[in-house]
Length: 170
Image (cartoon, rainbow, N blue to C red; front, side, top):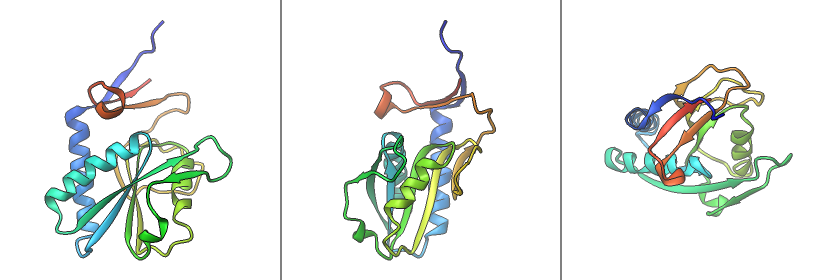
């Protein structure tokens, strides 16, 4: 029997959420010369890329895209990055992911930058599920969604899944 899926956000609504997040990032960083947008693979980097495109069109500052690949099932921080972490020194970093559930992924994402003095470290999440067991907060969230633990949120992105964008609850 196939899983029942409830559409939470369609393609247009996802774009509206990303536009709003981009404007919030602009407002928070209007006096910066450059910000770094770090997307957590696999879907966070696609959302980060979309945010960068929006910001490049509206913001006076430069934005640079960084990718972080985390071993999410590990009990300790294990990350592959496509940049030298020292390049982030005294800069604003926006850490981007698709869904915030327990907060473990974001906590590991923070760990990448622990040894570097940052100007600011902010988080941007498409869906905040409100089930945090790690002490993390979202600075910019597309949608806060109260769910029960057994429910699952699927973010489908054209770049990753070769299907039309959508956020589903199952």
